[in-house]
Length: 612
Image (cartoon, rainbow, N blue to C red; front, side):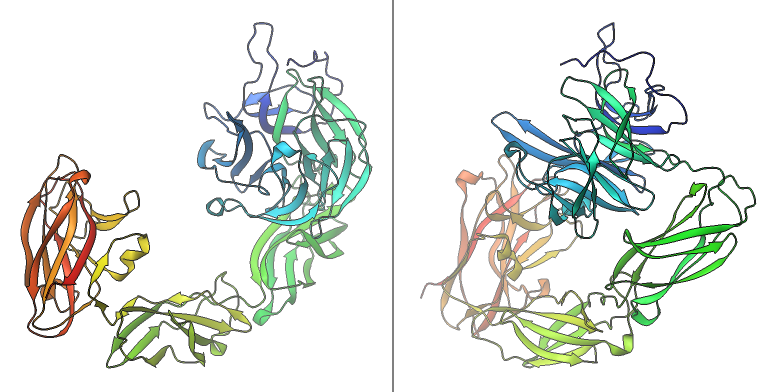
């Protein structure tokens, strides 16, 4: 529905900020063309100077958005036919506006109506339930990890649907409700305190941005009658003043104001560093107050400074231009911290300086573990851990290790100082896969487990048949890719079997070797596979038997080199009868040996059963 006609001239002019954001909607002009088609734009708060930033790049999404460290994050919620809702988050390199990644499996509460950044930490107002319910809205902190689908730590339930958010120079967060009320939201608890009524009632999701120079929030409001406006908002009271009606009644998300400061405000703090010795939560934040103001002129007088750790103020004071400051700071717990130092004088706030570091005792890195078995015992070895997960403090002299044996989940050792352990384990009768998990501990922090290689002991007993019902079935097998071209045996989930892929460069030379199977001397065993090839392609293989899961041990030919050309519907068994001279544990090897440029060899099952 077209918006109301924009007023001319603009309602307010003067010292207004330059804004940037994602235009979702814009009216058509007199020629019937959209004035500002869906894209990223820069424009003046009075509605003039719209300039497209994103070129030909398509920006996907229509909900909460945030700019962070050179990346623009844009969330979306779309309904497809049949009432299916799809939630997504796209992110873009702002230097090129090329998409980096598009996540379509984002789910509540990671669906944001609004996002905001404070010291490079992201907070948002999120739909806890499906948007179609009109649902509950919560406040929380979002981890900007595209590989984890942007998890959210929920801090509170909000009093109403929020359509926009912004933050000020002190790192305070403000939410704009659909009722028109403005709230200050505590970053730690999520408690929303009503600041006052804006006097404006938004209908649709939009966005807002803080202007450091004027100390006001500039809010894009989309009203029920289709109007699109920019209002300035006093954070302390929530009162909104009309700045302009936008030329195409634009609805904009991801709004930000380009940073400005008063000429005589302080320049950015210099030489900011963290000094927290030996894992202590009490330490110093050191910095230098510059000798110049924001306009690079020499400056004198007093300067107020504020220090925030992960968005929470932890220290403040007053010093002179040019002073070296060493501020006492306490943090509540060991963690990664974004520490911001902000300076202010009677002219206003200057630009902040942000440093990052881990404070407190850090978690040891994950041990690298190997396991081997010989003579009735396992030898478990690992590299001594000397590093931490986040690069923070750890005293290597205090590190100890615990060792857990699987599959019986037995903690076989604790408080070890050495990086080796011997565990007596007799060979079981039945085939069992053993692994070991080693944990590193230091100063109350425990690493993620380092997991050893798998070692199989014991043997399968006949009749035995492997049907490859799950991908885990392959864990018991030895796969040898002789050519090292990675075109080898793997699990085929579609058909619940295994297949050996082809190469256009190398012929197949790939072994699939079973776990050990116990055979008795003098008995005859039927050994074979059920196999087929990709339709229309021929594949070649042979089957062998040996006393170790190694190529050189595969000395007994069960099925000689055989070429097949069978589709899945024609899969059949290939087998022969074998009698071994000695009772013991044996391994069956399926050797794919097709010429290059074939396709896939499939094996539905492998079997061994006594026939006498």
